[in-house]
Image 1: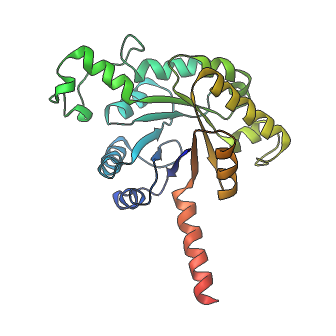
Image 2: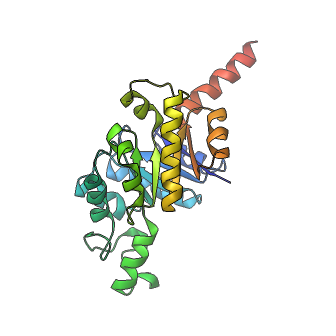
Length: 244
């Protein structure tokens, strides 16, 4: 069965705690579009952890400080937007993973209680465990990424691929026509590349119907809508029912 997450846009510890009580598997803290600092993200990650909600972060860019800081404060997965080359993905891997996979700078952090937990007592074990705890998941949402999807999915350091259907459809000249035959062909190609490489496949779904469709077609995970959109629709539907 596919795992289900959502995009965290509203901000606030209370919102994260509420999401932690609805049965989601993970949440994506969106620092690409959301107005979040490292300090606020650290607070949201802590709130998610307290409710067994896996905290992923969509990073704003691929520069080393952006990647390293999110890794150090406890992101369990990095969603990498606007990928246009394999070098971009490798840049994120280098900053997010310790040797022998990448070149992440060594500094014990809050995920190991600053090196005081038993699993972090030896440097080799600390680095290996830290590498296992954080996933690198590039988004396929540009034509350049689509053209290189087989090579991208085959990178041993990549843990999965996330399909961004809205931006991909815009790049393909069919804006937001996510059910267009060309889009379905492209998404099937991405899914096939993930299956062939043995990597996790993620996709954004903006409706229950789309979420069910892609889960039934083999996607490992569905990122269902934005928290803000679900919130607004819930109130609209309830108010409409109350007012008749």
